[in-house]
Length: 108
Ligand SMILES: [Zn+2]
Image (tube, rainbow, N blue to C red):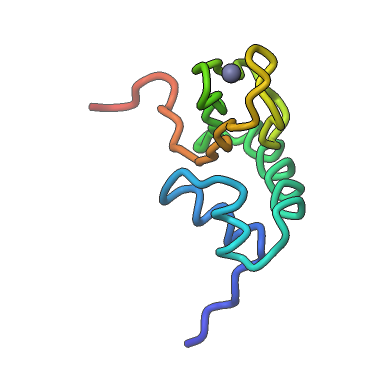
């Protein structure tokens, strides 16, 4: 039997549940431009906000020059430069999807 092919978004979500990926990693997997991947990511992030079983995780980008961490970042794009030292060597944020711990215990 031939399983139905995954949609691009399903493919991205599948990749993200396996390991953390940057937008560039994902773009090369699904043969899309990075900005299109980021568009998908925004939708995935939003849809997982309501999920009770899975959680979207974004690792903070970090400046390679001074170690500045871009905390509480809501945008998915890599920052173009560090606000502290002006270096453009900023790591790309990595995304992943992890299982949520269920609330409350059932049975044993
Ligand atoms: Zn810096």
